[in-house]
Amino acid sequence: EPEVTQTPSHQVTQMGQEVILRCVPISNHLYFYWYRQILGQKVEFLVSFYNNEISEKSEIFDDQFSVERPDGSNFTLKIRSTKLEDSAMYFCASSEGVQPQHFGDGTRLSIL
Amino acid sequence: RKEVEQDPGPFNVPEGATVAFNCTYSNSASQSFFWYRQDCRKEPKLLMSVYSSGNEDGRFTAQLNRASQYISLLIRDSKLSDSATYLCVVDSGGYQKVTFGIGTKLQVIP
Image (tube, rainbow over the protein chains, first blue to last red):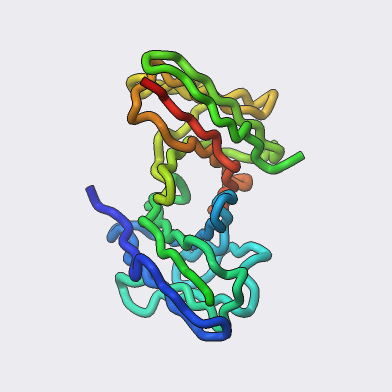
């Protein structure tokens, strides 16, 4: 069964540094998403991406965040200047139509 | 009212038991509803979509009540492997953004 893959599985970064999280969505999917889950809390929507542009974003997705689809397969989330509170599990998801979404196994981001 | 509300549990049930979870949502324009399952520190995995007519997949049955804005999940003949957190997920009214509930933790005990 095709799946969403994410790299790295764990990223440790100093506060203030830039970090890029990578995702390869399922190949025939057209919609891409990033979510985060702080330990012990619920999964939170960050951004959705369709037709090479952001289609929706949450209030969490401020100017420190950006997404890109640099080629036909990768989908990246960049955090420009990381803060301690950015420590979380970040999930990428993709969908063929608007729903349902299929999730990758996540990148654990630890900010020191 | 929270956008998507679930009882966090935990629900501790013996093997073979039937257990039901409910979830309420606040956006009357929501059109798509799902149950996902999440194991500890893993990604959410789609369990089933929820339709107005109700749907069943083996031991799992999902129901949607639009008038009361709640969704239910029934698990029959619980297995140890059903132990997980069950996430209620609702769209924002036909858009791509979905909102997750906090999840209901289920522990099936031998």
